[in-house]
Length: 114
Length: 111
Image (cartoon, rainbow over all chains, first blue to last red; front, side):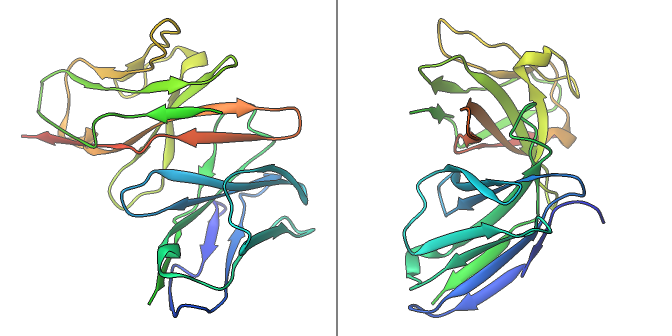
């Protein structure tokens, strides 16, 4: 499958812990976007990377960080986890910086913080 | 700052009836608007974009700058249209870009 892949699909952890979510973009896509979807909320933009560089930032908490590696995969690190961080985290990719507005989404990583 | 509002979380219609999913936006620049759809057990995917002025799966959406709206319409709903629909706005800056999504409308088309 050459689409956007995210791992893990599901993750259960405890408050105070740290987790890393991984995303591989579509083949040829240089931009990676991270979104958070909590209960009763829409997709909240967290951060965008383009070819390894941070390009746009949303309301990403200081406890969260991300990076994009030379092979273009990206990781979202969530630390000092709180109950409210439980959410579905989506990764999306695009060829450039959203020229046509089409993002290709992964299936998401569901994080549960107990 | 940009904002997208979808006033209806849930919308239920009967097969063959017209359907309209509402979307309003606020943005100081020139907006680029999109509708994304997520069918059951599938990924979120682009349905249509205002700049293309196209009809996809019978759906159309017209950008009304005066009313700051981008409502999605279909004259005759089908059961396979049941899905979650998200309106999105692109705010492009020189350094990067983002899509701002509304909270989504769950459309159910009843037989």
